[in-house]
Image 1 (spheres, rainbow, N blue to C red):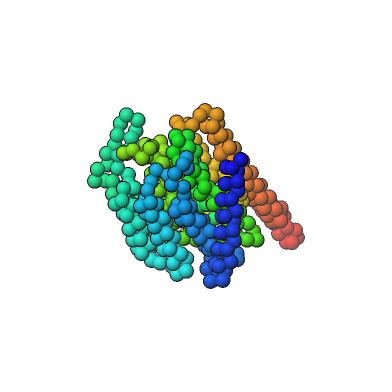
Image 2 (cartoon, rainbow, N blue to C red):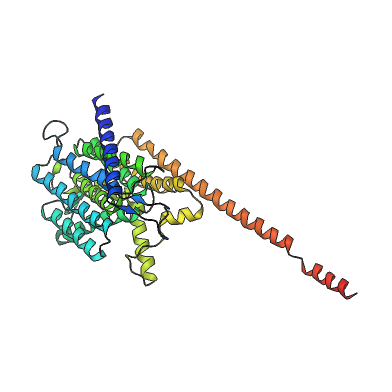
Length: 376
């Protein structure tokens, strides 16, 4: 029963934090204004990240130091994690107020990633069963790519209500299941963050009290997923990382990662800056194809869920738990049916319009007969 009250308390903490952050964002005019590239029509507060990250930093500092919930890290590590989150949050907040140059954003991200690598949160030894891969001198660049990749993928997915927040929720939930299945207390921290994300989504998906993550939120969430992905992959904090746990955040963010790569290729092939935003991301294409917001979210979240189940979780959890893959499978199939329905509907509309044109336009024979009649 006490777990129920803990979850309820975290949910209420998140809701209060989101409500207060929303009021402050409106007061300081920290809102996202509509534009040709965006799909919303009214100014929306960019306060979602504040409502998540500030409680998350407090949770890390106030987390029990002893007992079953205690994390296998000392105060110095807590300071490192909280400091990294606070830094990327503040940079994102500045970017929300005034657009920073891409080089400035990437420089701060690289500095944070380097700090985490320097103090030991790195990709170095990766265990593939009985085989161990030693990255050696590649540890630094691959670790930088890991953290910066997650931050920017989360940021790129933040172009539609519920997308980045939902992907991060799926990632943290899968990380929590994996950690708890192997007796790691980091699973409880990941689960606490899931409740904070649920609080955010109740606002983000609302039509009346809507908020956006903002760069402060999307970048911070990506960093959180990257950090927990490495921490959970160190089973018992032993040397080296286990691939099956390390693959969880990659599988959860697989849709966004694929979107990043296709965006880079698309913009490069058109000789445009890879940092210049457009409306050709996966969610834009699905919306234009006829899927509404809910089915687009179901399709993309469903694909992420299927990736996690097929690639990772069956090797770590029981068979009955793995059967939950039917949920994301149903989401993807449902979205596919809706997409097919939208396509058939568009095709029928085109045929109907063309038939009306044919009926309203006289045929060649009728025009010829009409000219003869006029000549007589």
